[in-house]
Amino acid sequence: MRSSAGLLAAALLVLPGCTPAPNAGGGHATDDETSAAQITVFAAASLDEVMTAVADDYAAASGVDVEISSAGSAGLLAQLEQGAPADVFIPADEQTMERAVSAELISPPTRDIATNTLVIAVPAGNPARIRSLQDLDTSAADSGGSSPTLVVCAEQVPCGAAAQQAADAAEVTLDPVSEELAVTDVLGKVSSAEADAGLVYSTDVLRAGDQVDSVEIEGAEAHPNRYPAAVLQGSAHPDAARDFIDFLLSEAGQQPLREAGFSPGDSE
Picture 1 (cartoon, helix red, strand yellow):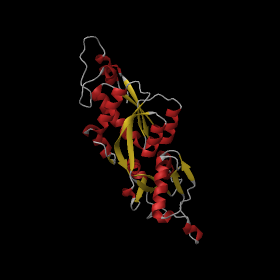
Picture 2 (tube, helix red, strand yellow):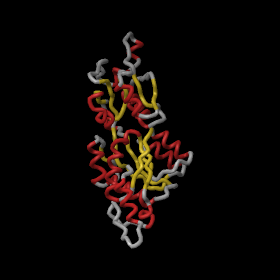
Picture 3 (tube, rainbow, N blue to C red):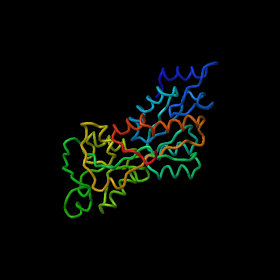
Picture 4 (cartoon, one colour):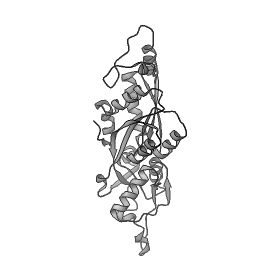
């Protein structure tokens, strides 16, 4: 994120007579990188907190400030399609990135920086006594039982698509009381006890602390969500954008992601 130290370092880089510093990814800064005082990263809502920490580390290492804009992946893609300026795009699934590629918004390659898995979030203490995805099956209500109040993401956003995939794999029918456009909104309804359960990423539960508990979804690890990162075609600073992605894949970038509960991506 923007910091006075980062801005000062960036200013020093462009002073006459100053020698450009090596970039954070280990190479040498180009003319584009030395002129980049700031890049903008559109990142999935589930990455918000950890990406802010990584951005601070990158700014300290490179002198290039990073502005993080976080929201639901589908909403971020819609903004990009409408011409919003940004340098890097990191949605929460490959399908959203494929739509960005089809819209010719992306400069290949895409590189997976992390993976995540879906869990059932419940209010602290699990008052509805949910033990599995089958406990959320609305067919139980049809046979005389009662279904807990469920909130999920809308199917057009990554966490919603993952929720439907999990339901299909478990052969259960979900009937949520609301469908949200960002996983953070699902978590908010569970942590405030507006819902008995919500399907969110495992990292969201870790981030929520003692506000919620989690129930594992059997087989969820076989269908992880991948987070692909790519430079945008309209980037004003493509070299600095690529350097930031290199930083995300370095040990310095991966450590905060691991600490936040993410698993590594496939890219080296």
